[in-house]
Image 1: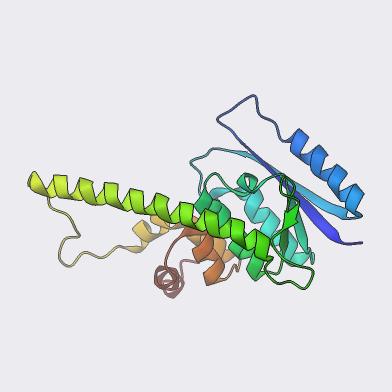
Image 2: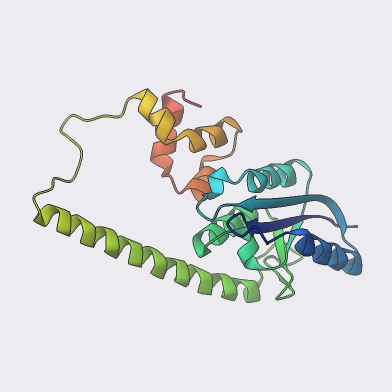
Length: 210
């Protein structure tokens, strides 16, 4: 019998939401398909939290790596994250670990039985990636516009000459990254979770902050 875990998520900003319905629906799916539910992970988090701050998501990733789990169940893709970028990051980490995501509302999985990417799910993921790209482009344009307005009004942008962050500042700014590195999560996966560059993560290791 194939071992699976259930992952459910609702936003803490909506007090009326509960994840019990998601769990019940996915338990019924598991029974129907002959899967054995090894664990259930459920979170009620703020939409502002990054993947690196989502304790249940991190606990699930650690669990599937140590218990040879091949599949996680979600009612819909949005349960993996608050936005398209979070969803893509979560799926990429799971793909790298050869863990398939069963998406109930589409009745498809991200990986085939051979551990290869499912073409149909890849189509959905490609659409998500394009949405994420457009979102990031919009954010960059807004930031660039803000910089231009700031400079136009006499503001100075950039670090002072000779500026270098000290260890105390690094520990505070990258505390989530340091926590993940201390758990021996790979640099690549920490980058996917937090968005922090590999070079910066290596600097944290070189400073022995983790």
